[in-house]
Amino acid sequence: MLEPIVETLAAETVATVTKVDVDANQQLAQSYGVRGVPTLVLFAEGEQVEEVVGMQGEERLRSLIERYAE
Image (cartoon, rainbow, N blue to C red; front, side):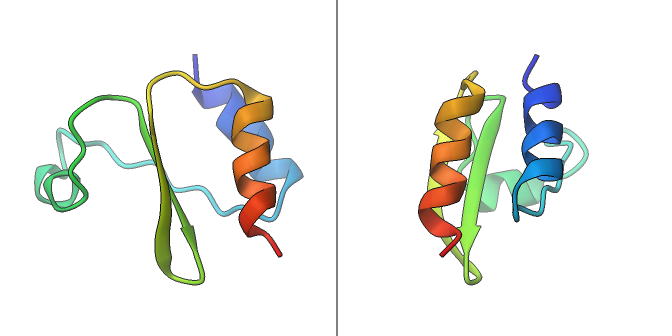
């Protein structure tokens, strides 16, 4: 359900999106403290700035991206 929203945002914003399979990359998921799926981690200038767990609407995610896009 979240994938089409994320794909739209990747196409329409400056965000770069990477999808990670937490089952295949358990060590990476653990290093970011991922406990629930979906978890979205937002980075700005190489630093983690937000973590959002669970289904989110397009406007909420767009707002987060725009906040750090400057």
